[in-house]
Amino acid sequence: MKDKKKVVILGSTGTIGRMSIDVIKKIDGFEIVGIASGKSVDLLLKQKSELPWVKTALTLTNSDDIDFCGEDAIEGLLNSTNPDIVIVGISGFVGLKYALLAAKYSKRLCLANKESIIAGGNFFFDSVKSYGCEIIPVDSEHNAVFQLLDSERSDIAAIYITASGGAIRDLPIEKLKDVTPEVVLKHPVWAMGARITVDSSSMFNKGLEIMEAHFLFNIEQEKIRVLVHPEGKIHGMISLKDGTVKALLSHADMRLPIIHALSYPERVKVLEEFEPSGIFNLFPPDHQRYPALDLAYDCLKDGDGARVAYNAADEIAVQAFLERKIGFTKIYETVSKVIDKGWPKVLNDYESIDNIDGKVRKLTLEMINKC
Image (cartoon, rainbow, N blue to C red; front, top):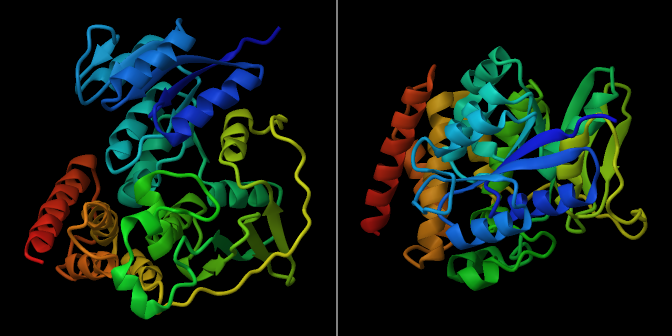
């Protein structure tokens, strides 16, 4: 009998983390040995009560009932569990720090933290490779493209990342400045966290995914394209040099890319069979409605600091929108102004990246407070 692969889940109390626990309970060959959260003590303890053998970690608060707490909690957890696989479900820039740590201790990162790639860039990939660790993307679009590329040996003419367009896709552009967080948070397809749901309506999330795809698949930005697909059934496509286009279709359920990232290269059945029927609309995005897309392509050209600024300024601006400090269209205006301040083209280590991230956040808050 094969030994079970040991899994640690970073961000176990978030959406990806909770789904990961649900998935692993339903498939053989994997054992959760560690779970970690920022400060959700009660939910973490509830998860431990259901998985009494796991070790636990908290990074932003303390509890006598948790095995590891504080700044070094994640490293303590990883060192004590020696996992085969780490699911990085932590959201935000802090995911870069912990993804780098996880790569030291594990053989595979199931990566759901796009900020690691966007802010880390070549430094992140070079570091992970040096540890002998592999990355399998968990983002639905990138996981789909990964699967399509995995068996394809032809030259790739383009990759297509699909987008729902968010909750306010059909709202007249002139009304976007007045939409409330409650309206924006009603995503038509996916159940996700607040920031990514807002970013779906502004397409800042697709801008992030354009950057992510560039580094993840080592593909020129000119070959990375976005298509609006309201039905959410086509998750990614690749175009080949002979004019053929391959697409991956599935349920709009994040458990599928989680399962794939865990079990690759094998296939495991958890969900019911998908019926590829119905109407499938695909059309190019309106760049006037979604200016964040062009901004993302510009940031790829402008280098490391611009990408860090794009991510960090958006994170702060989205939170300000959720707190009703700025309007929806001010998110893009704020991020664009921050990026225009100019940032270093090359960042070669974590300390430099972290420093720029901090400066961007401070500047963004100052701009918002002056609104």
